[in-house]
Image (cartoon, rainbow, N blue to C red):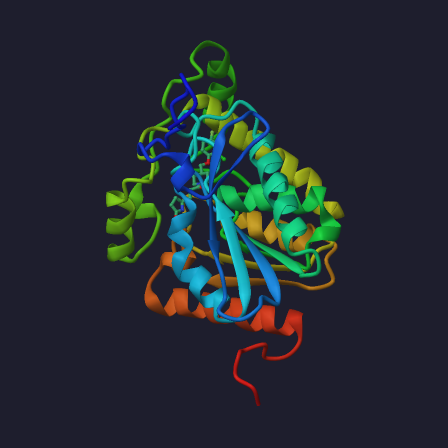
Amino acid sequence: MMPEGSTPALSPQGVPYTELSHYINADGQHIFSRYWKPSGSPRALMFIVHGAGEHCCRYDDLAQILTALNFLVFSHDHVGHGQSEGERMTIHDFHIFVRDNIQHLDLMKKQYPDLPIFMCGHSMGGAIAILTVDERPDDFSGLILISPLVLPSPQSATSFKVFAAKLLNYVLPNLSLGSIDPSFVSRNKKEVEAYTTDPLVYHGGMKVSFGVQLLNATSRVEKALPLFKVPVLLFHGTLDKLCDIRGSHVMIDTIQSEEKTLKVYEGAFHALHKELPEVTSSVFQEIESWLQQKLGGTGSSNIV
Ligand SMILES: O=C1CC[C@@H](CCC(=O)N2CCC(COc3ccc(F)cc3Cl)CC2)N1
């Protein structure tokens, strides 16, 4: 029985957190966490960082690829997302996402002290990943970014919208800027359908206050780029309407990393890991060979 008077904390979906893997963040909120373990002993860690409105279980396919390379993959749902606590897609300071990332990183470093750690971020998760690596550059062996949020797209953040958002933030912070158009996420109809029908995805409008935090993030990212030295593998689609591909060109030209690669996919939309088969399989292959090369050797379980 629970101690007198206290009921178990429930996830937004009504599941007791005692039944879910999670950690408690600095604000006392339950953060749902996910772990994909290789059959053999892991040779490296991969920290996956999801984007706005979505959740970490959407990275199952990518995680499977990585566990086959003997990576231990870990991730969590950001505050206000998926199975974590917090008002849906609401944040009063973008740094909270980075703070919670660093807490999870430190938990995993304690458990696996000698393994190299990589990070993979998508979209807003790319901005969170860049800022996390910027704070802990010595903790990471490499950073993979799938259409990261570096510059706001002219579509979603015209200078008027930016001005309006900053002004409105004082009077109507909860006003909706409209929700993400699912057809912008991918050309793959099945993936658009999966996104649209996923109960763990938030489809409500983006609050002005959230948009302002995203702008805050892009300016912090831009300040971090000139000092960035960790190896980077970048992917971006030319028809991405949610995160401007210009951001990836700015990033690849600005960072000081010796090893930096940008792969551009003609005609591809935003979620390249959930795009048409030829795009997504190419992205996964590039990730695999880049990681193998970073870790040296095949690393597959078969003994030669
Ligand atoms: O698989 C998937 C499913 C979801 C998608 C990830 C979505 C994601 O994270 N985005 C896309 C939208 C983008 C809007 O940006 C702004 C809006 C208003 C504003 F005022 C300033 C900015 Cl910058 C932020 C980043 N990928």
